[in-house]
Length: 204
Ligand SMILES: Cc1cc2nc3c(=O)[nH]c(=O)nc-3n(C[C@H](O)[C@H](O)[C@H](O)COP(=O)(O)O)c2cc1C
Image 1 (cartoon, protein in one colour):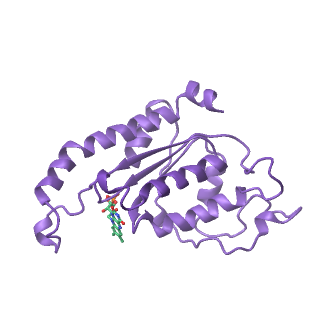
Image 2 (spheres, rainbow, N blue to C red):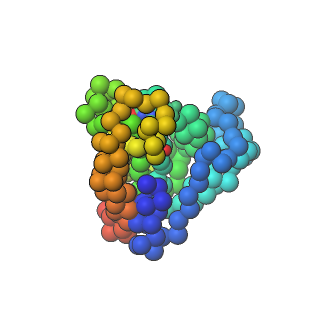
């Protein structure tokens, strides 16, 4: 879905880059507070140097940001949580209440989520809170945030080879063939929308 979103952005002339967090070697925030130190050389920046550093620098100069994660145990993946700590905390302004962000510009953002549960189960799993709070985080630091969810995903190419008897394999396959392409089209449109200059000017 992220690839489709980036294709949408590229269709509007954007230069795009896709980073896979699992390819990077990094840890979450260690609370060193170098990013909050008065007059410190890392004020507003993450002082930890590791595999995440080039990505954090890339985002500092980006005009838009789309994050994607599967839902794992009712949240985004652990790697995504660790990444968010490192991305957001340095920009979180502690000085006073006149504004919460040290990020120098407003840029449009989006979340893309995939998950096994059908949409009807979202309230039961309290996932709205997760979607809302994650959108709030990006809005607070970067700018307006949209969220796109793909529900009831196909987990296995061949369900008969796995201990997964609780799922209706035929229904999963049908949905994958009929609904998932539509989710990918929505992702394309989302990417294109984030790069629409008139949209960006309105929201900045
Ligand atoms: C460790 C783990 C935990 C998961 N937890 C949830 C969950 O809490 N809710 C859910 O709907 N799906 C859960 N899933 C299913 C994934 O969200 C689903 O397979 C998703 O489509 C994977 O993303 P992908 O299709 O982009 O690879 C979990 C899968 C794994 C491997």
